[in-house]
Length: 458
Image (cartoon, rainbow, N blue to C red):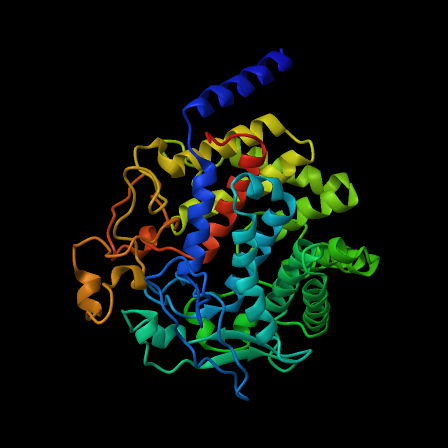
């Protein structure tokens, strides 16, 4: 009977895919969104041409060059802090992009997007290398969330002060340093056979940042005041485990496995996966690296609970958070797909991941990805996209207009609907209509995994 049921699920997935969505196109569009979020001097091959050079004077306390990196796009609690470079969210985004490029390279290749995926990742990595100015000093943020909130306009036209904030031995940030170490270690694996010199630089910085995180303990949101407007950290122990696991995967050095196992007792009852919660990712990664069933059992229990018991909207979205509802679900699907890859409930988890992604792409009659499908958000909460081309004026009057955004923010996943599938395409509704780099990263990685499994319609 179990075999018959399993075959029925496979057949159902196959049939639904026959007239399904082109996931490859969505990955391509998602990568365009990352280009729209670039800060600094834009490259000659920039494809989002309505964006121009911006924040060219971002500097550290001692004049260090801090240009580049990504604008976040969506700080919690504040509705308009779109042009701050938040290090914690950027590093998490980079780790997830690297994970997808590493373990689902075939999906990116099938989408014709491997090169663009690596470029998107490298844009963040190059910024991290600049921000890590010495062994125990890392610039955590460029721009003030408080000041930035008062501005609506193009990034190219910003005139407000852009202070920078660091973590160091007296104001540590173990969560930020360890997450950035994870991003750099995972990216070492992505680039080691592409550009070994660059990859080795990444790994060297990863080791230093992890040592800094491990030795000097503290939350980065306790290190300086400005971040508390937007992204408070719940703790750093999960990042210490997560970062150590990635360094162990990158190096094979069992010292890092020991670090991970020593810290694990503090998070063994934690679960979930998000920019603030790394336990789910750490569990599945440690299961893959060690073969220890305790990690896999924990993930099985978690994924089963999310699929069978978690609240759903009437139309079927697994609903976890009212803010960024779609990205929260995508991250769950990401770690459950990685669990499936280790042989746990593969048919069930993959079918659910496809179902959730298809909800986001249009199964309700509306696509939550800008520029994809016949009906999608045209008023997403995004300053640059809302502004007409220069020299036209753009300010809070433009924010308040009912007209669609002059520019299509192609590939952006908006926050998403509420618990009753409620959603209004309104620029001022930042809870449901904001975008963010980290919103797209898990979503994009799930798409790459599904493409690799042969689920794309093209």
